[in-house]
Length: 357
Image (cartoon, rainbow, N blue to C red; front, side, top):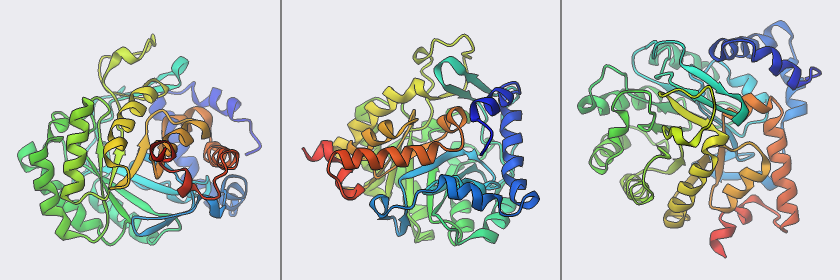
């Protein structure tokens, strides 16, 4: 932690983004093995334990509302290190029943001037079995673990539920919640599954297989009426929560010279889009389900704004890359300051405060 992150970032950003991510992953995997006790030192600087931030949700205790979004730790290799960095919960995946290599490289691009990323990864992952064996060694974990599950690229949409069934069966005893990913833009035709008929059949088949909560994740590119419709359908079908939102394929949101015509946008460029669709869904579903805000959250102020709009939890991804390992600590510290300013003694009072008005 003694190295200034701007210096570290300048080195990392000389590498291709996917290579830089791999280097960071290896550092997280090996740091505690090479330097025993290093994660404890990191945790002493990054973890905030304050009862004001604690919530009992989805059958688990969340010590703070900030989680790492799906896609960062696809194969569940970085759980101890991410926990030491202060996250209140961790989402691993998206992973699929069979291993797959994902889309052709290059498939990850930095939009540096906009503090954003464009990714076209395509659910590259090691597959169900190795990830299951890895997670099994750690579960139950010190913070809640969410398994983000998807279908294999070669599985046709009419058989997609079979893939989700397999993963729910295999991980039901080694995660705290499932996240259903049918909103990634990087698997052909996957977003076509954001339909009521599919959602109803999906939940009717996977709900009997697990007692764990199932969370549904939506695209930010849906019309608000459509988003509300499918979120209501998911909740009525048995979803315990909604994540709003995944990446965007509206390339008009970016002016970057590095913009491509494929892949999903994340980071600051989608903050407003994600916030607007969150507000629309929260207006209908606040108090009826757990709401998780994701998309362009890079500060305590931004997180707090979503919390007051109705978010029980928030997720970050891109801002972790741009702002570094202390971001979780900084977001939680700022949330506490903003709660004190507003006279809230517990985060539950802040959640949905704007709606309650």
